[in-house]
Figure 1 (cartoon, rainbow, N blue to C red):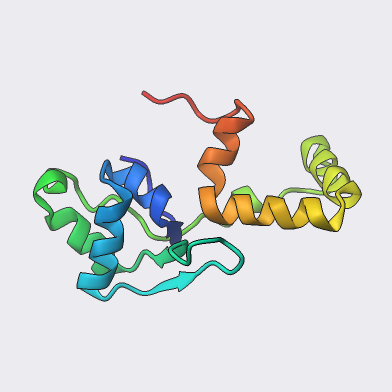
Figure 2: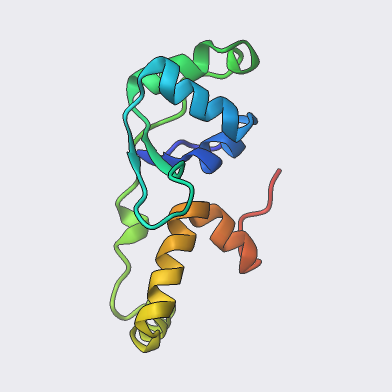
Length: 131
């Protein structure tokens, strides 16, 4: 099980807990979880789920996930996102974003909203290897 972030797409959460996207969508409705729609994604089903303590507790109580502990922390670490300006990788990413056209930026935003960071890193072939 991976660490849950404070907000996750239905696809990311489904992959993380080993369930189908449809199951996650059903839980959102049935449990009344807080979720925000992702604008610009076709179909209207793209959502960011707020991973609250109630969501964590529900996930830990499901039969398939009962054996898991509540080590699923719902707080994103701030340090990985605070890259220093002298970091060459960070500078290169910034440079690439600056030269993207508005249409490319829009498509990248939609992709990240729909698929999430994990899928993005997998497509770049730089995702962490699974144990």
